[in-house]
Image (cartoon, rainbow, N blue to C red; front, side, top):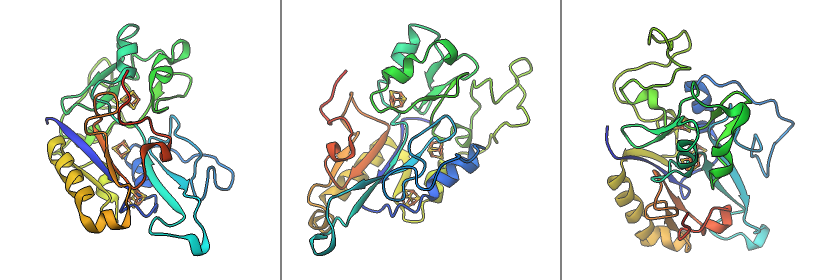
Amino acid sequence: MGDKAILIDTTKCTACRGCQVACKNWNDLPAENTSFFGGPGYQNPKDLSSITFTLVKFFWSGRRGADVDAYGNWQFLKYGCMHCLNPRCKKVCDTLYKAIYQDTDGFVQINQGICQAANCNACIAGCPFGVPKSNGQSVWKCNACISRRGYSYPNTLRKDPVSGNPTASSWLIGPELAPACVSTCPAGALKYGDRSDIIALATARVADPKVRAKFPEVNVYGDTGPFGGLRVISILTRKPGFYSLPPKSAKY
Ligand code: SF4
Ligand code: SF4
Ligand code: SF4
């Protein structure tokens, strides 16, 4: 427990989408019903949803054939909740139903037993990253695999609200494990640990001359900004705007 973070290193990601599958598997989420490929390139589905908490987004770099440089034709970004240090979703919900909270590791959680999505959706409008999605009853997003981090949590959908006992669909509560997506990534593009260690790792990686030679725009996103910092720290091969991300200087 403590001040934790997840690292996404886009210089290493191969877009295998193992993280997407692992997230579905651990969180017991059904597959999406999509037509062929939902988004650009092999991106599928098109967007996050109440049953897709993470999605590897594909971005065309506009380079082809002889013009291909070290970046290649496509860049990939594993997308989902950024677990903002000062989450706007929570700020708006605090004035309404108080369904959003930060767990003891600092990750942002939605208590679906309290969420009133049928007549609210304020967090969806408030999130600058387009992350939370409603199924009409409640709002869902990445929970940073809270059930793998070794302590119980007040999510009444996963525990019987009267007895407090785990329901049939409850996740395991046990010793701390890294998030399922992190544990799965075969390319070593995802890491989990103390936020200060994750930032140090990211800073060292972008300072590596070999990495800079291959990716001249490589940068760390989420350490100090945007919005005061994130708990999902990304090493981006391109500038944030390339991925349609808010600039690092963005403030509420
Ligand atoms: S599992 Fe790792 S390499 Fe594969 S898509 Fe996810 S982040 Fe990229
Ligand atoms: S990315 Fe959006 S949903 Fe996630 S913590 Fe930040 S404001 Fe909330
Ligand atoms: S941390 Fe857990 S819930 Fe979040 S994207 Fe990874 S596997 Fe899914």
